[in-house]
Length: 309
Image (cartoon, rainbow, N blue to C red; front, side):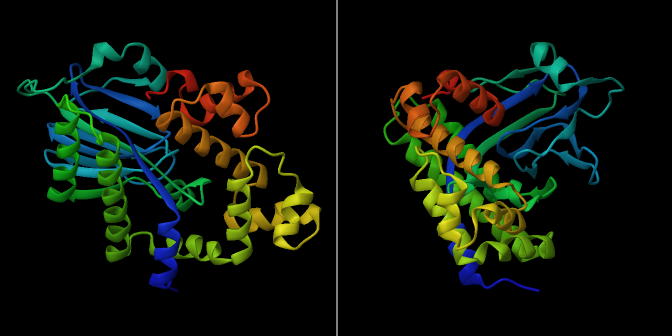
């Protein structure tokens, strides 16, 4: 079982990749944090010390030491052990409330404290056909990228850029680095044939032209109601069967695809323009701003009004 490189390139070309954040966290008090949820794709690198990550309910623990990297896809819930010698554990909600007790974010050129674990988190988003998260759709576990000097260099460039006062074209720079890291991770998986059969099976289902037309129509008409009758005419089936078609091809419900598409567009609009929250809600098919805000929080983990712009 395999996938044609041209088909893979076409799917990858449909992906929207954009940068979110890079931060360095110094561990003040070693702890294991349980059920850590994540709304974005993250490359994790240990700059100093020791970190263990383990996907909840599946997968083997990944132990990272100085210089080593791992990839953590969106929506994957993990347990994270900061440091090597600790016997205590707390849930993610407790950690967020008492975050300053356990970690602090390093600013600008702050030096690491000797003996403490320091971790860099590089966050970005990857969605394809303006709908689903690419890596979440593939259903990948966290996986080890090893001592990766190229990724380390990319993340360091972004970290250094954040310190500069000159912000001209900064978003373009950050997004360009994120796209390079995205392509590198895909190539890394394909080269080593990591989770290969699973990836091929998932991506093969996306080669149906009817599905691509459907995604395209949804992305261009998000301000409308997008009824089953309307969408079934794109696929060429009865309204009662369009949901089954989408579910079979993607493992997501049609309603989920539409809502994910709305949320992806909303996130992009809010991050890269000065359009008001109410206008974004209207342009993505929500008549009530309060409902839009609640849905946005569920998908992205923050309110639309608090998104950095």
